[in-house]
Image (cartoon, rainbow, N blue to C red; front, side, top):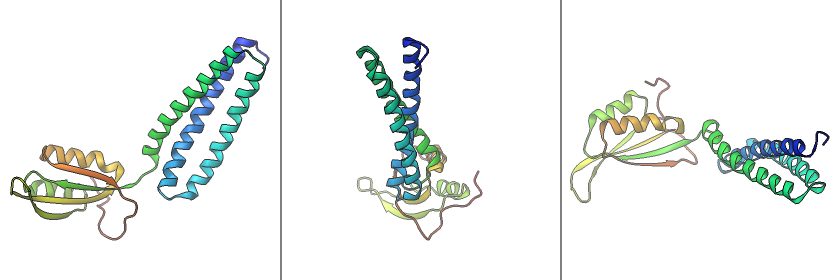
Length: 187
């Protein structure tokens, strides 16, 4: 570097934080694609991730070799901060851009045909079973819904507004085929 020791350290610090943030964001997204069995997306992201990692480590080591131990500790902090920030941002970006199907099981507190109708009007395909509570011995509905993860907030809102005591279980679906998954017309 050529600006002067302190300014060089500040520049390298921000380069390391930025690079590590990008690197770890890519790592988080790549991991999600790998788990979702989408190697066609994971592989090119992994290539970029490795490239950024190498360039950041090279910049940090080049600087650390010719500078005092205190500067090396500052770069280790930059590396760690970029790692943490990238992990955080990668999680947010993964939720935003990597969509998935979710399976929702709803046990209503009582039979509620209005809730069933509201879900249908909002484009949620449903399988409805009549169930009986083990303790209450009261008949109710057990509703199965398969939907996109980005519709969960709307689904929760409908359920909570019409049955605050409903038991809801949400899990990610590995594979979904056949059946009705909702309409494209949504309120």
